[in-house]
Image (cartoon, rainbow, N blue to C red; front, side, top):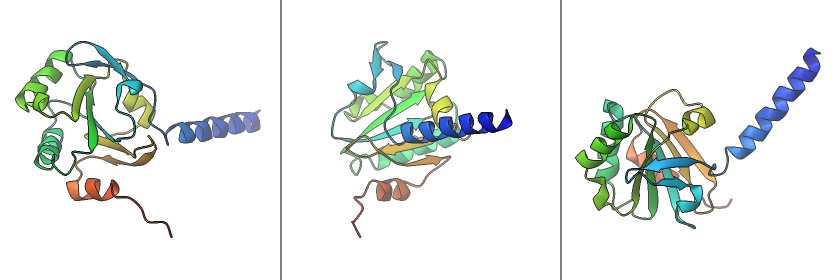
Length: 158
């Protein structure tokens, strides 16, 4: 009996790992109160998902760092998402004047999808995807922009 449970658990884990290598399907509530899904993100564009909390100092510093490097990230769609209350998210959006950046989206994770899917423990959490929607890497906690920018660089074939 323990053997079959172990096999079932291993199979589930492998399936989850395979799913985690691609941009997952999600539904979020945007700042304008409309919903969005993975299909609403631009095709053939690098994606950075940043899971944050509006009251988190590390998240604020990460946002400052992203905005300081926004020109270097002009070819990256940045999706900032939180599970915190909608009004807190909206205040954060307005304080950072994120509407002026065409490649920055903000939305509320009303189903608490991303923390469950990625099982991260620290904020901010970044998930970087290439133009084909394949996961490049993830970062937990404060991350230097040099690491983010380097991760988005094309890898040479050896």
